[in-house]
Length: 129
Image 1 (cartoon, one colour):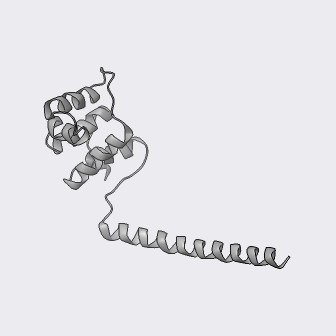
Image 2 (tube, helix red, strand yellow):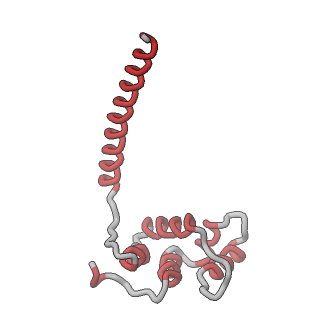
Image 3 (tube, one colour):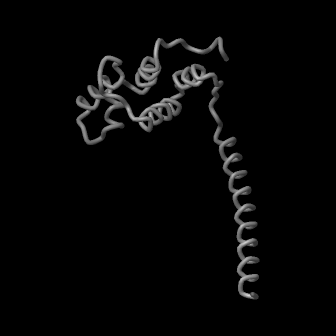
């Protein structure tokens, strides 16, 4: 995987690569700021990706760019981010995500059932006292 890892000079460069894969700043800017014209949204996004400017993206916007890029098959910017933080990232298939969520629901159901049983026991003990 490391051999396939692209090199970006900065986090902003990695985000720029994702934005380009999504059709450019006007396209992505319009998704991030639908209340702005595509030109204004594109300029704002360009400013946010410029290290010399005060404008910055919110974390939720960065995540949205990564998610949109993943949908288009562009994972390298996120993989680079993960590698910079010392992690190895890979895309998760829908089947894997369904399995993970099924496990969470099963575990949560067991915990909830145990809590309800304990609460009922406490309420019965209180009523008997």
